[in-house]
Image 1: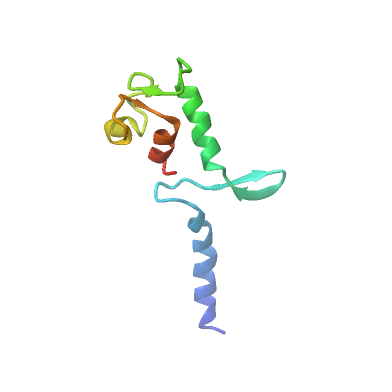
Image 2: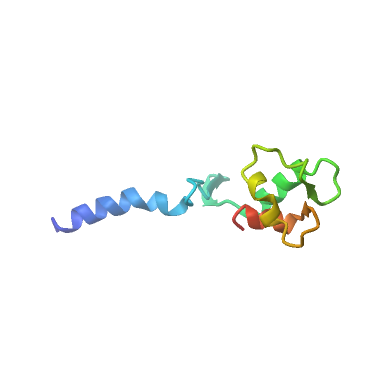
Amino acid sequence: MKRLLPFAIALLIAAPLAWADDKGHDHMAVKNGQTQPHDMAAMSAEEFAKLDTDKNGQLGRTELPKEHKLAAHFDMLDTDKNGTLSAAEFAKGNGM
């Protein structure tokens, strides 16, 4: 039993970290008093809609703020090379 105690303590400490990604984002949310995974696709879609200021369904380079985490990767994310990011290209960049 004494040999299991350190393992049990380590497991209790590490378990919450299993829900965080490598950037420290917590993928759990509390809704109606219950803890559940965030809907990452919905979060990405909401962010995309906010950034799409001209509401054309595409993000141009000028719509993505320079300080945004994906700005430096714009050309790589623009897989169809049309100069804009679709919602799908943006979601992939957000780790979808």
